[in-house]
Image (cartoon, rainbow, N blue to C red; front, side, top):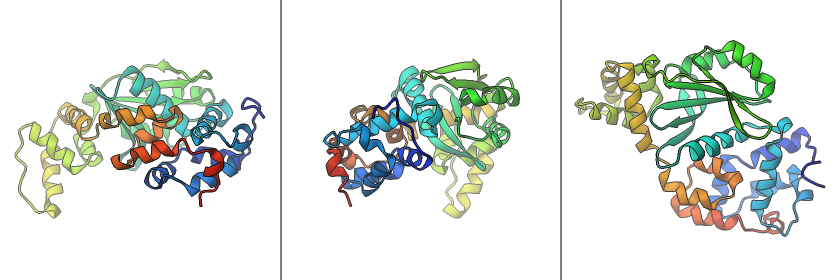
Length: 300
């Protein structure tokens, strides 16, 4: 059966999507094998379009191609588009960092890119609901200078009608291009120092304050958080935001992963950018990619 004519049931689509989970990637990296991969490969129905003598990297690429189809688009495909076309396309790992699942209050921002500013990308795929969009946008405007919603055609009109004019609206097209429908306005002055403090790590807040000339108190850990908060909330929105951008570009830099990412199949690069894999396991994961599918199906 050709890839173009492949039709997936919901259970098969779920298995295909889970091939790009952080847990599977970590298992492959730590053990050089993955029983989870063997189970999902069987459940995915991809074996009839992949010769079992081929390496498993080919099966990942087939899964990725299927998920890019309009009816099957999954959140991972949107994250991959942002990673390849924005982080690695417009920017680079030398100039920018991408953080996925960035917590802001009760919400988790899907993808955030820090370069000279901060830009959040909230994904509303064809399979997502828009019920939380208003609260998410309100929350993200307090932390990120630029807020973007990236969506499919089915949600486009509803998204445009529900977001403020300074929020960007991006369309992932049928040709897998990101098209700007409404430009995001870069507004660091709109952010809130207290919300930024609650969204970053304590070590990052310390670094921001030090860079701005604050003296960090010598206190027990139990008292440090509140003491730093009192200092941080005195910052102007621009000071807090720009300090966050400058600091997170260092503390969360992806540059050490550059060679590793290039060596991975294109289909797995986005999940590898957001999954912590020990440096000593990089070679093990790369070697696993060349395991024949027939051998990988025996992993227990």
